[in-house]
Image 1 (cartoon, rainbow, N blue to C red):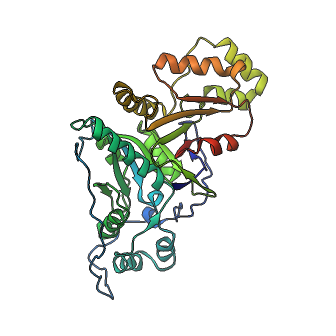
Image 2: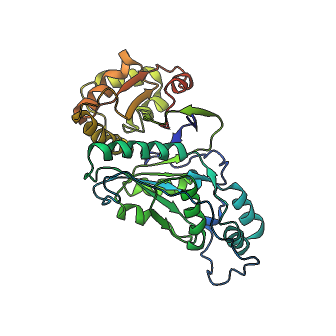
Image 3: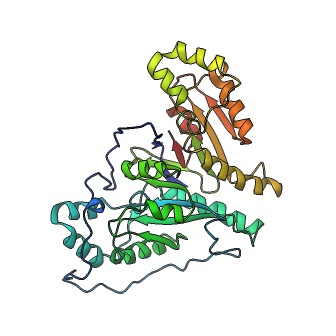
Length: 350
């Protein structure tokens, strides 16, 4: 089993103006080197010569399509600083500056980074791909993972060594050398962007790209290695934040009244609706081969809504959209933690 945090990733709607982001245990912070001006690649001044790479694992994909076209795949763009742990390198940058940071990275390029909070999620995506390749060897409808980083290309060698060490199948990189990656996300046809940088997540959402801020783990738990489990909140995640804004402005009674009056009016879509659609499309490929009961993708709705008072509108909206959700939990304000402990999702969008 793989261990994963049960802490949610934060989804930000377009109405969010300020957001407090949990401090990043892997070094992601608003003052990161990635937001500094570009640096000169020709003046590294290395004090030691990098050692040759040893012990690299051979990665192998059994049959099927190796590199799907981005327009055919479900593309997941993952920041290097949520996929791996880089807090030590961040301290070098903050305390000694860009040039020393680059020198440190190159001198340690044969030392792989440890797994970060997005690592089990990515491993689960690859497990789903393995099943899809078995059933549809020539299909390009697969998860395609793009590693996105503000790092300079010199750091790419360490990232590649790390990916090989952990036996990940990630061939597509976007190393921007300090520039914003958002424009590249559209070129990759990105279905989901995960980052620890709340500002860049807002930029992606403004461009119509599903995105979420991934917080650093406070608690690790075992998650499935054979089934990808993705949990979604309802309002401001799958749905718009229309109803949530009424609740915050006018209270619970007014919220219930609003939902009853609009029971047959569909909710507008939220930032993660498209990603649920993409998951559903892949699920149906398994259903078509008789694998509904052992499908390696499972989705959950975990919402503070109550079923009788405000659940009908949510379910009618999903049905009208043609989306299936495997399990729906209406908690009526009860804590979500115990439910998530039972589900043990690889990722929870809150």
